Length: 482
Image (cartoon, rainbow, N blue to C red; front, side, top):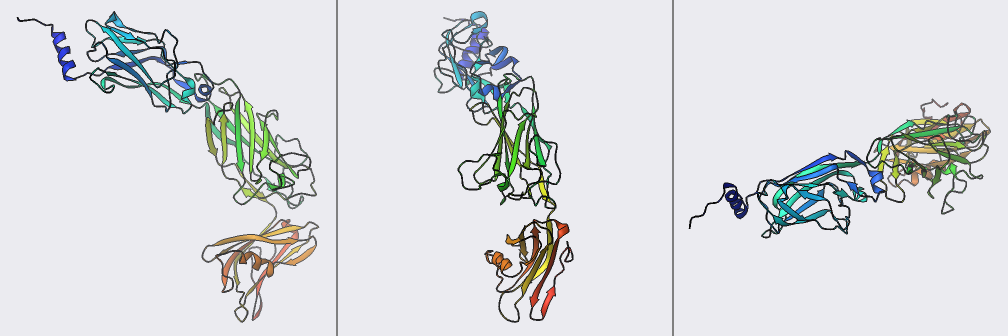
């Protein structure tokens, strides 16, 4: 018997039997534009994927027992939110496809919907999802969230039939829009009047102490009008590190003897005042046991409002007479992070250009100085004589570089007030002998930099060396006089 079939039915049957499939399409209607990473990480309420709906238009013939899978991508760990007993709200136009919508009791990156019945033409059926939602806390990695679809037929092993390319659902990013230095450190350690125990001038800062201070301010910008913008207080942390090999020892009166460090206690020689948006409330400053890292922590609401984190360094007294001298240094980049509650850091960046501390002490450079400790006609012994015409004791440090570019540094010792002292013999040899790359027994030619924690206008420096022929003067960059 000859039977007649409709054209559409014949095309559909051929497509199904041969595995040929047109592509289905997904559309996000009224998508979320930008979601706050901080807000998402603290929100357990389901976040709708679209403000109106998601539509899936089938591109190929569908039959009963096929399974449609919706998959989230783009953000590692992103998951659909759990659903109630009624499942997600979905309807297919004209009832050509009937779906089994499961209850999602556990958040998952995929959602499978079985086709329980079909009628008529199914190759262009539109299914509309009105309640697809994601679990906000699964978006903490940030990035662009996508949605894709695929179908698995009874004969398939994976969801490779009638696939829909991924479409963007929403983006997830931090509310922090920028981090910048508002006011850099620029203090001049004052040896002329304060023996290196304070700064020469005073910034207008947050501290309430009597001494002159130097302030660092870092401004953290915030985006506005983000979905799930966090209205709860976020924790701001700024870490300031000392220059490599240096410390903030002057901020603590007992360096290296305790497991925890408190700043601003009454016995400390210096202070570090922390502030958030001009108020000391809720902002703290702590120091690590190595005394080379300061952490400033404060909490504030951040929704479209820039926040300023500040720290001011100063000596506790207006005219300090005791304590450890402030170390001049160039600061490496600071680390800034924003944390929501007890969760891991959600925004972290480094900010450079936070400044430096210089000194009005005495720095003398000797461009060339020979040394040879072998006894005999080749012996050369450097001469370094420092005259201190002030009443303050000073510390003398040295940095040397040989012709091979190898650097070495150390402390030569101290020179009391109103005293002349030699540092070029045993003190210099002790420093150089501790430099494994040096071989002063067989001779080295050195460039030497001397730093004395003494005011330059009351400090005299004479340099030279003793040779078999007698004493030879070596002119330094101050020509023997500061």
